[in-house]
Amino acid sequence: MITIIDYGSGNVLALANVYRRLGLGFSVARSRAELEGCTKLILPGVGAFDHAMSRFEASGMRESVVELVKTEQVPILGICVGMQMLATASDEGSLPGLGLVDGRVKALGAVESSSRLPIPHMGWNDVQPTSSHPLFQGLQEHARFYFLHSYYFECARAEDVMATVEYGRRFTCAVNSGSAYGVQFHPEKSHHWGVQLLQNFAEL
Image (cartoon, rainbow, N blue to C red):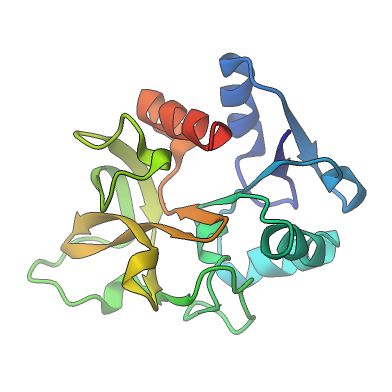
């Protein structure tokens, strides 16, 4: 069962609509008890890092989710700020991340660039997978996704980088370590490319 984590920060309805159209079973978890029986997790997120982490902590689901991913190897897909929450820490706030992918979230404005592009990075952009990972099956060429963010994930290990994007310079936009996956873009807003990625996650 795909379980979308609803802790009050994220596009839960949009994600649910995608899986409903695909005819794939899903549930929405708003408490620790509702995580029972999950085989995959989706962690959406919008807004500031500390706010999202605080809401997740207050939901009572944080410890259970980390246990499911680390001990039981349940796959999790973090989306936008949900991806950033997988990191160890973020320059946007002072609270610790979930530590499921070794790395730190940094401000896009601190990225050295030959062009002065507006922040946030908003709109459609080409995503370049770094390998033929099953999450990007059918998306290796000409895949475009919708972005809206001012921070990016800097992995501590190069092998955890799953895809990159260029905006002023190239940086990481998808990560994977063990059963933890994250994408900086919004697949639920990215038309058929996003639908394909969410289906790929369901089939991992």
